[in-house]
Every structure is written in structure tokens, then in C-alpha cells.
Image (cartoon, rainbow, N blue to C red):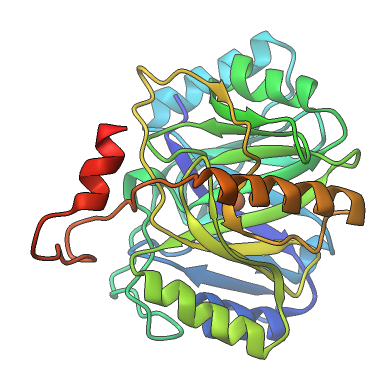
Length: 330
Ligand code: FE2
């Protein structure tokens, strides 16, 4: 039903700061749409992320993509059947979103969700704001969104039972976090139980590890690093998190794994969210200490995973690999 995270929008009056952050740090291409709206491109589409002054600080929406008009109608019927109010949005809003047509509704925490089909393709090539190799989007969607919630269970029930998201895996320590997929991207959505509904971060994935390293340098220079460079245990992403001009973060990542949704079995992850790194300044001192201890444990055990590469961003080294043969042997 839902195929991917197509777009996201955030209310903010800090348009100038966002333009600088989006282009110079993340590598988005900025597109001006009047003095209230700033759009960002990540690929061949007209827009992927929008910052809207008129929406007000903290407001947000997420655009989930379906295949066609029939799939959109089916989703609307399914929502209405369980008592969720659905609005068939007018053509004017579809034009603003640069999609053929969309509906809107809310999740149980009040997040505005939109479902759409027919994203417009731009007639000019993507031109990144900084010299990066590009963003990994296509059938995987734009990346992932992570929301904070008061209680995971009711929100999880809505996304899995009503919208059809699949649970990828979850952690209970050092904080509760549940990860959901709608395509081979390990997660397009995650929920973190902090006791308060809010926006935690938006992840974008780059083709080159060096893109992420250079973004890290830019973020360090601008004093924007909220989570240090590290690697996740579940999606195997090497990433860091930067503070945006709004109250949430953007995660810049590389090397995310793919899963097979049809056969995937959800598991609890016991080593915490990271193989190494990712010191989180947003955690309480107590939880941060627990997270640090879990990483020390991962280091003692030598927890590791192969890098996830794609054609064009790696070069196979000559010679035999005793290390890898040994790892496979174990
Ligand atoms: Fe993330």
C-alpha cells in the first residue's frame, strides 16, 4: 500500500538559517517559492523537503507515497472504515506539493499525514547545494523520519495495523525505540518513547561515506553536532546528527542496509542503537551513561557488521581476506 516516505514539511520562520543549513551542511538544492516557502530538492523530483513560514513553528507534515489513484482511494476507504477522518485535498494543495493528488489525515498523536501519488519530476537536473555525490532515494523514499511519542503502543498500532507498516526491530534500552519499514529501507519511520509527542529527526542517506564526513566537518565548524559520528546496530548506517534551525535534528548517513520485507522477522536488539559512537547530547545524563556502557560492552564483545556498499562507491582490495573468512567461519 504505502511505498515510501515521499516528502516532509516543517513550519519555521527561520527561512534564511534553513536555506544555509540545508544547502551548505546537508547538500540539498534550495528552490525559492515566494517569501514564505523554501523547498529543497534531493533528486529528480521538484521537492522533497519544504520549510513553510506560514505553518508556524513546530508544525509538520509527512507525505507517504502510494502507487496510483486507485491505491489512494483504497487507503482513504481503509482509514474511514476504522473511523479516521480523511480529507480529499483540493488541486491547489496538490499543485503546492507538486503531486498529482493527495489526501490528508492525522495519526493518533496529531501528526499531519498526507498520502499522495504522482510526484512531479523537474525538467532540470538536481544540483546539490554543496559538492556531494547525491542522495539515495528512488524506491527507498527520501530517508526516514523519527517521532517522539508518549507511549509507543497506540501509535505503533495505527502505523502497523491501519497503514500496513512492518516492524523491523526494536530496542528497550537505553530508551524504547521501534523501527518500521514500507520498502527495503530498514526503516522509513521510527518511534522513540520520550513521554512527549514531537519530531526527533529526519534522516537522509548519501552515496559516499566522504559526503557524510565532510558534512560532519561543516556541522562541527558550525557547532551543530547533537549526536557524534557512529554506526547503528540495526540499519548499519554510519551517521551523525546535526541540530537544524528548528527544534529537531537531521541525520546524515551512509551505507544503510536493505531488508526483504516479505520475509523479514522483527527482533529485539540487545546491544543498544549503536555499534560505536553516536554519543547523544539529547539523552538525560543517566540514559547517556547507560548508552555509553552498552557501547563499551559492544567494544568488549567486538560487535561488528560488514559495510553495505553499492556499485561505484567501493573498490575491492586485492589479496585474500583472512579477517572476513574468519568472521564468516564464526
Ligand atoms: Fe535515524
